[in-house]
Every structure is written in structure tokens, then in C-alpha cells.
Length: 336
View 1 (cartoon, rainbow, N blue to C red):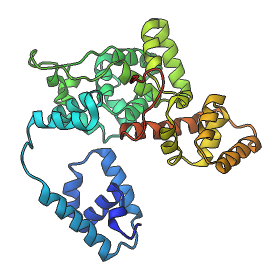
View 2: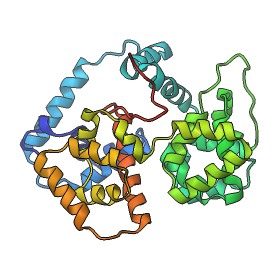
View 3: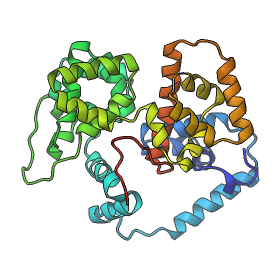
View 4: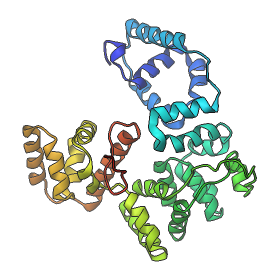
């Protein structure tokens, strides 16, 4: 725990603030957060120890200062929200976020699924039409969607993924209530703009989070049905070998977030380009130690290598989502 609250990260400061509010007030605040935010802050709260009065005071003073500077101007305006997100994230990242923010206000049923165990969600939707399942999975976060897809019947997995990849948008009314989706009530104003749920990129993101064996089986089935679509999905998938295309600043940020143990296992199955990319972004001493670890480590199971690579890729995607790094690979847009 940092002595100065100003040095604490956002989650730690939020945890201190919530613990200062009391159980009932803190619970009301947590109700307004998403499942991942609650989990992150809850984990920090569980590890907080020996928080001094000075630390609490600094966090509260900072919170009051920030609140005092806020105004109600523009709040509640959809145009204001859109402009803010575009300025903060850029056109590409903001487009999907805008749909989720604006339509998520009335999509309580779908939002509730984000709090549920993947197996429980799979049980709810498994008997629905594959198109409905595809829409639900496309709406959820890729990591959760990949777990749900992984426990659905194998014979339906490739069909569902192809439907996600070919989704071109659905009417906002269709996202407003889970019950309406389950009952196939896709009514709504035809003049309303479609939501940007689904698409090839969405399918690729879901596959990125799946176990390699399941991922390979699904891709093989997709290619047998539609080779061109399979190639499009593959081109947008970010795999471990694509780390060789990430710039040096991004690799250095990634290395600060992963353990040496995970790195050793992951590199056991990596090609030379990725290894050299990693070594060149470490100090000479650290690179030598990592090389020694790789040479001294005996044969390891392929499943352990793939697990470590998936773990590192999950960190890479998190850093990319927060804007800390830019992922390379075939699907990355080029800038000049």
C-alpha cells in the first residue's frame, strides 16, 4: 500500500473510498458498476491492510475536489456521450462502445448475463435458435463468450461462430430485454440505426480466448463450410506469433505485466522471431537469465505452453483495450 494516496492506482483509491462509505452506501455504488469493475475493486478491498487515516483523508479530499469540479452540463445528452467517447477512444473503438453505453441502459436482461457463470448462461440459451445464441454471445465480452461457446454442443459451435462473423447489426429493440430475445421478438423501429454487435472481428475476438484445441476444431469446421470467411476470421485473430509485430514500447509494457515463469513456458513453443523480440526488449542481464532458464528447462507439455501463451495474450489484449499497447498482426490497421 502506497504511503501517498496520490500514488495509488484507480482501483485502490476506489476501494479505499468505498470502504470509507460504509456497507450500505458502498453496496449502492457497486450496483452501478459492471461485473469486471466489481471483481477488480473487490479483490483490491480484500487485500487492503493498515490503511492510515492520512491515506483515507487524502483519497476523500481528492474525491471531493473532483466532484466539486463536475457540472451537469451535457450529462444525459446522447450527442455529448458520443462526442466524449470518440475523443477519448477514437472512431473505431468508440463505435461499438457507444452502442453498448446508450442501448445498455435498457438492455437489462443481457447485462444480467454478464454477472452469471458461463455454464449457467450456456444452459439458458443452449436450446435457442443458433441465431439468438450468436446475438447473445456477440453482445457479451469475448472472454465470457468464449467460455460459453466452449461448453455448448460441439456440433453447433462452428455454426454459431459463423453467424457471429456474419452479423451485420440488429435493431436496438432486439437488445432491450433478454426475454424478448428469448421469445424471438425482434420488433422495433426500422428507421433506428442498427447496433454494431457481431461481425468477423467479434468472432475472431471470441476465438482468441478459447482453448487451442477447441479453437482449431471450430476453425477447421468453418473453413470446410466457408473457406473465405474462415480466412477473414483467421486474419483478424491475434496469436502468440503476432507479438513479433508489436512495437518495442508495447512489448516492454507487456513484460512488466507477466511473470518470468509464464514467459519461460510460453517461449518454449514460440518461434525465433518472437523470442528475439522479447530478448531485445529486456536488459542484457535479464535476457541472459531468460535464455538460461529456457535451455535448462526440460521438455514441457504442449498444454502448459499453450496455457502460458493464452495467459500472456489475455494480458496483451487487456493492455490493448486500455490503450497502453497496440497489437500487431494481420488484422491491425496500418498508419502512415
